[in-house]
Image 1: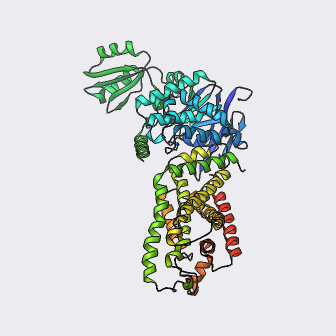
Image 2: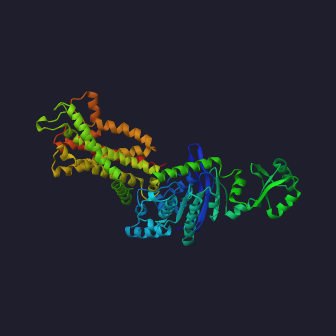
Image 3: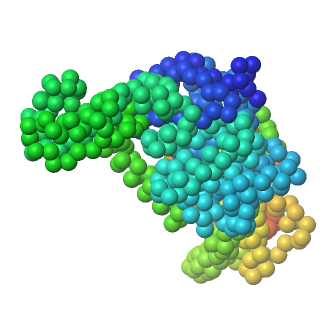
Amino acid sequence: MADAAGRTIVVEQLVRRFGDFEAVKGLSFEVEKGEVFGFLGPNGAGKTTTIRMLCTLLRMTSGRAFIAGFDVRTQPMQVRRSLGIIFQDPSLDDRLTAEENLNFHGMIYHLPRAERRQRITEVLEMVDLEDRRRDLVRTFSGGMRRRLEIARGLMHLPKVLFLDEPTLGLDPQTRSHIWEYLLRLREESALSVFLTTHYMEEAEYCDRIAVIDHGKIIALDTPEGLKQRVGGDIVTLRTDDDAQMERVIGERYAVTVRRDEHGLHFEVADGETFVPELLRTLPRKVLAVSVRRPTLDDVFLKLTGREIRDEEASALDRLRSAVRRRQVRR
Amino acid sequence: MIDLDGIAMIWLRDLLRFFRERSQLLGSVSRPVLWLLILGTGLGAALRPGVHGTSAAAGESYTQFIFPGIIGMSLIFASIQSAISIIWDREFGFLKEVLVAPVSRTSVAVGKALSGATLAVVQGAITLVFAPIVGVKFAVFSALTLVPVMFLIGFALTGVGILIAARMTSFEGFGTISNFLVMPMYFLSGAIFPPVHLPEWLYILVRVNPMSYGVDALRATLLHRHYFPLPFDFGFLAAFAALMVAIGVIAFTRPE
C-alpha cells in the first residue's frame, strides 16, 4: 500500500536528539513505490538512527513520518507489519535451523500456519537456501546468513524493505552476490527498498541517493545526477615537482587543484583531449597520469570536503567484522 | 496489549533451545547430584543428628532435609538462565528481530516469564528424580501440588531476572547483580539450615526473602513439615510473582 501519490515512505522534518547531541537534524524525503532509495554517508552521519525511528524502534524527537500510509508515531503496529528490515548486525538465532527462524518470524507477524509453510518455501527458494532448510544457522557462512535474513525480512510480504548496511563486513564476492538477489527482487515486485550504506559501489544500485552528513541531507539526486555535479573527468597527475605544478596548472587552466600524497587531482570537462595537450606543454617531467569518470566518492568529497571512508570509519568496520567473526565462532 | 502469537513464539523458542542444548540438560542433572552428594553427605556427617531441626524420630537425614532446597536451587538457576538469554539475545541481535515485529513488548516479556517458569518446572522435576535415591518419599498426588509451587517460584524469579536484564546491557554487569542476589537468596531461604533459633538480624533477612516461602512450601509437600503457615507461603509467593513480573514488564517496555 502507498498513499494517494504512490509514496511508500514520507518523512517530514525528522529530528532526533540524544541529550545535547542532535543526531538527525530535520530530514525530509519521500520514497516512491518500487524505488530503491539509498542513504549514503559516513559512519555517525545519522543513517541508522533514521532507520530505527522509521521502524518504530526509537522515538522521534520531532517531525512526522509515514510508512505505507501509516503514521509511524501513532500506528506503530501497522507500520511494523508493513515493513521488513535487515539490520546492520546479524539478528538470526543461530541455534535454530533456517526453517525455524523463518517459522518464528511468521508467527510474530501473525501469518497462519499454512501460509507460513508456503512462504518459507518461497523465500528460501528465492535466496537459494532451499537445500539448507533444516540446517542450523550456526553452520552457515556470513553470506548465507545475510541471504537468510533477507528471506526473513520478505517473508511477511512487506511494502517497504529496510536494509541497514546490508553488505557490511562481507567480502566483495559475497557482496555482489547479495546484490544479485536484491536486484532480482526489485524487478519481480513493486517493493520499495530503503538502504543505508557507506560503500560507494553499493549506492550505484540505487534509483536515487540522499547524501547525508552530520544528520542532514546535503544532496538528493540520481547517481548520474550527483556525478554531474562534479563537473567532468578527474585527472590525477604525478610529476617530479608537484608543489610547483599545482600552481602552474591552477593558473593556466583555471581549475582547483588538490595535492596529496598520491599527486595532484583536478577536474576538467573533457579529460581525454585535455591530457595530451597537458603533457605537451607542462614544463616538468610527468611520472604518472590517469583520467577517470567521477565516482560517488568524488561527489562526497566535493560536497563535504572529506573522504567518506575516513580513518574512524575503517576502525569501526574492523571492530564490526571482529564482532561478526566472534559470532560465527560462538 | 497481550498478543498470543508473540507469547507463544517466545515460549516455543525457549523450550526448543533448552531441549536441543545438551549442556543445559546435563547441567540441570549434574548440579543437584553435586549438591546432594557433596554438601548433603559432607555437611550431614559434620552435624550432630537433630541439630538441624530434623525430626530425629522419623529418621530424617540432613540430605533429606536439604532436598527441597536443592529443588529451590534448580529453580533459581533455571530462572537466571532465562534472564541471561535476554541479554544474550540483545548482544547477538535476535532481540531486535522480536522488538521490530508487530507484537507488543508486554507480550514478549510475559512470554519470557512463562518460558522461564516452565523451564524452572522442567528442571525442578528433573531434580525430583533424585528423591527416591536420597530416601524422600512422596505420593504421585503431591507431585501434582509441586508443579504449581515450582511454577510460581520460577515465574517470580524470572520476573526479577527480566527486571535486571531490561536495564543491563552487559554479561559482566548481570553476573555481578545476580551473584549479589542469587547467593543470599539461596543461603537465606532455609534451604541449608532451618529458619529457626536464629539471631534476630538473620531471622529478619530470612523472613523478607521470598525464596524462604518457596522452600517452605516445597518442604511441606516433600517432607510434610513446614515452618510458616502454608497459606502465607502461597500468598507471599503469588504477590511477589505478580509484582516482579509487572515491574519486569514495565522496565522492559519503557521506550527509548
